[in-house]
Image (cartoon, rainbow, N blue to C red):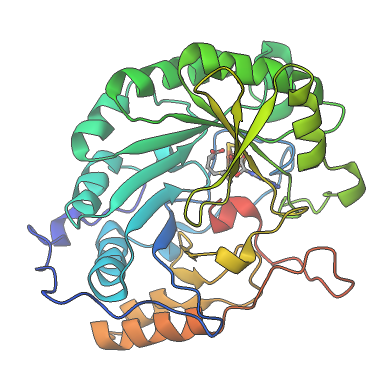
Length: 347
Ligand code: SAM
Ligand code: SF4
């Protein structure tokens, strides 16, 4: 059974501070305003670029943050550290028991609130999540072909995802973004089709370069589909007009000539954007990470469970962010993969 502690949740959020908090800044001067929260490391799919077919151990339940613990950290982030956007992810965040209630309590803190999901189960939950205060969703969809989807995710669930996307749009969780990871020899011939699907459906398409964060350690730089290849594929169908990057967003964008549609490419490997990174990550078991590729974490769960006050947690948070490195160093000879895979960090 999932751990929930709604009985110990506060009825109302602690009052917001009257003064703006000091910025959450690292030693390179980057200010952090975006927190990615992993709600679980569990998933109902097994995407080949993310997990092995079998054999990945989930976190023991008692190690996962309870709702009350997670809300306390989110409140510290928003009220004391200047975090303005919260993104809920995983694993598969829709698997978190009591999600609408948690969303409502996070929304009450006042940040912009979004969710990254594989879309399974979204069809019946989109309206409820919107009403709870969720603003936007990103839905992962790598192929439009049912057999290919079943092979890539190892589950035959394409219809659920398509229904989830439509429901998210109807519920007003806009803009609904579609995330796809191009994989060599698997879906790289479908990039134009995916953009056309997004244009027709009123979604925003984004392609993500695959990263060395799969749980099985099979990532191979030589085999990844690069941003240049993605753009070359799209250029066979559209003229691409560069739009650039919004604020510190990871996606670089291009407008399809003659349309209002914009396509994003997140090229963490070949066009790293670490210099403008404003993100910090909290894992489902309460470990703070200053980078997707960090090799050290700060144990906020231990602080929570040993009675630390908010000042102590704030100090630990600031210290962790302050130590952030200048960049991820993928490609350097001494690059070390993080111990945790993407699904256990929160993508
Ligand atoms: N389960 C949800 C989903 O799939 O959207 C949320 C978690 S998933 C880890 C978040 C995003 O990370 C997805 O868009 C997924 O495609 C992407 N992802 C997973 N493994 C990746 C990898 N090795 N390289 C690049 N992106 C990856
Ligand atoms: Fe699950 Fe998302 Fe990883 Fe796919 S990418 S296995 S949906 S966590």
